[in-house]
Image 1: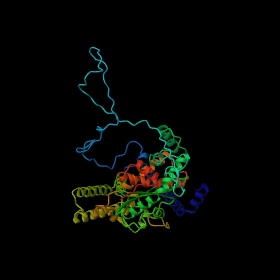
Image 2 (image 1 turned 30 degrees about the vertical axis):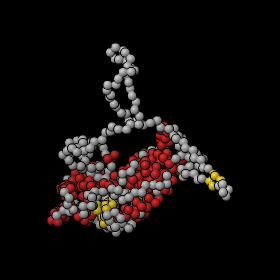
Image 3 (image 1 turned 135 degrees about the vertical axis):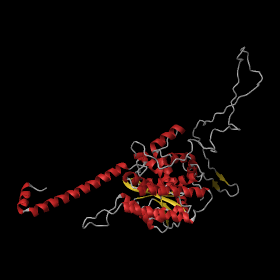
Image 4 (image 1 turned 45 degrees about the vertical axis):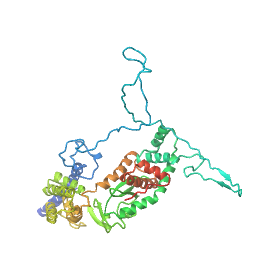
Length: 478
């Protein structure tokens, strides 16, 4: 700040010095105003973002509830015509039949013990039986041969691993509660005690999880190999707290396969360590993170991400090119869905050509509406762009990846498959906050890979875990 004495000194030097002083002060003020304006705009942009126009999850939305990107289907709420409802079915062979007979006449009070039955009304009640643990004692005999005198000892079955041990079905239930239903250890113990009356210790639960993890090592390798051979696969990542440090869960999936891997790095190093992208020769659908582009495979971008970003630019900056780009992507998505439903394998070539031309024109319009900001003398790097300019530049640069769903109907419009497969990881974090050890996180990733894949292929997660606890996990075909 200029002092009074400095101002008087400059005035004494003459008009030219005064003009230079004022010009300098105005320049400083202009720079401060520009910086504050940019800061205010950035804060307004942050406040304007929610789940419908950014990657922010719905749980962070503030009221009022934002408008969904989903378009109205025109159908009435509820079950649609042709939908097969589900209800309790009548059982032709009930486990038990209980006959209720009247004992006396409702009119005169006479005994009906020997009266004829003239009609019957039937109802069925479906319930669970009283649950109790069943203990099986195994006796391994040693028998002496009458010919040579040698004693041959029988072997115990694999589940009889000690003097007293829990069986594979109960261990499978314990792992199911902790790893699939995401119950913390204490709540898993409480539920086992309430249902079965057993005191399943922390050590027993940890041992069951560790055993299941070890048994599934070969199954995980099989899932990775199958994903590498898939023509199209989805990839995504999300943060995870492990031992109080930030790590990342990488997912690779199809509608039949899921693989999770935990790694300290988010980018290409973590993606490679997950074991699917190296050697993958199909089309990788992802959100555009730079690390994915380091792998030599086909690439397709998630257009739902683009729709959210275009919604933000159209609403916050009132730019027509963004609204028109959003309408174009939605129209192309609908055109592909209609063609696929009609049994077509591709859109007509002229339609695809026009779509690319319109797409390029809108990207150029976005660049024109968001020219580069003036660069300060000596500032490093290229001129900065506004959020709209960055989006338009990215859309133009990756046109082929954004419109990959037009060329190959196997390529989806979005990356919802991977996002759905990551959703339960976020639920786990909300319940437990993370993992205490890297070992626990790695076990969780392997077991969830098996369970998610089994469920996609029509198996019950509980059945899958009980099979793994016997040492013979399900063979998951692709």
